[in-house]
Image (tube, each protein chain N blue to C red):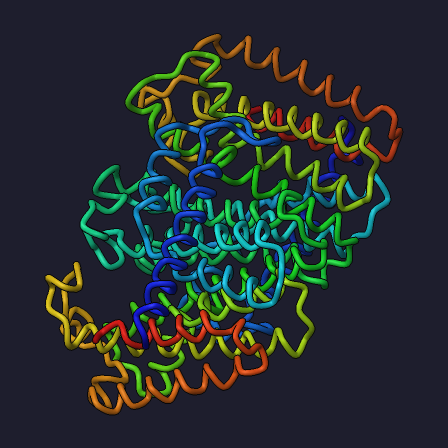
Length: 305
Length: 305
């Protein structure tokens, strides 16, 4: 990878993160929207604490870059990206709760239940989850009705009992009964894979893509999800707490199996290379326009190096 | 009220509750839908525990009866009713958590976090909230795209930070700083009023009603919300734990103000009578077809007698 490309990728990632954060800040203002009775300042503050925290905005970036590649509308892409980020941030707020992963820090800052209290953290998560659907349903998301309904329908399935939330439930259970390899793959596809897959599918839906392109981007998102999880599991083994910014070796310490613990670091790295190649082949039809998304796959796969 | 009417009202309420419960049971099956990766049995069990609990299904009844009055499609009404009940039930599961109201019993049964555990209760609530939007977005809810989007958009505003969730946040805060009368009215309009108002508005949207009818039913729903809360506050003062099935005088004991504590029982009863009259006047244009909804207003207002 030459430096010019790397710089432009990093700049593009940063730029998208800034644009999404600016939109999220506007959406999390204290002015009630039509049909709302009021917005309690304390709850809004907790929501902003959980959302405007300097995240990389990887899921939004996937939406935005898919829409850019397919020539779709950028304004709508930003709103879809913001909705997805609301879901991601709510899941972090709830995952951090004492009854769940019990984490006090995220990105070096106190988690929402520490900075506020548990009840407020539960409600801030609930409100962000609800707001995601508000953003997608609103006419301000200038897309055909069918596209907005498809975005809502697919998001609910990616984020709900058959996706992210179900994966979190399986993950809690995995601390008591270790799943076999098929169980690990399923758990990860639900817990982290579903939203990453959705990000790319949502980009296609936002762009009005045909069924074949939607299927291709959905598959691309699946590969991104597999690579993300594998790189995460590698990080958990190879990083120390200082680089990671959270307790390292935590998953292994809890006795949760990962594909890395089953097959070893070398096999995981080889699999990551294969996934990046597969991602690149999938995007060949888009030529140079697909370059940034292939870079994204490479970026995600190499987070531990 | 003559006995024949009362019987037929009770039978209608029971019948609707049975139909909604049957649909909810089907929606909460363990078979994954298209786009879902899997449905963890343990989480589904917790969701069913929180939903299939013999509730009166008052909000669903308001949807169904509004659609019946306006001549809309009953199948769609049932699905909209089920979506709304998912929201109501998720809110009860989260409200019952130790960090919130810390209730061990609901309808004489262990609450979800007692029957399962806190993490599972948080996730079951999250999954039900998400599922509500899935139900409304799905093509199985045979309504025009515009109607489904309006139902989703209005639900997100009624249930989110500017409605129910925001009201719950204000309620927690009210335990520390007692609100004035305007603050109490606002809190109650958000916490309990917003979903009841939505129920009636959703019935109008499901029926393809014109803007004037939608506004009329939204106002009717507001009145239902006011009456519901006032009757609840009266119950809190006048009932004992045996009749109420939960700890009585709990709100007063926590020092939360209510309109009953500010103005007294007699003023509250007089206000309830006025609200029922206002409800009846609003539905006059619908003639006999509006009879059941007026009965519903009366039923809600007289729960303490």
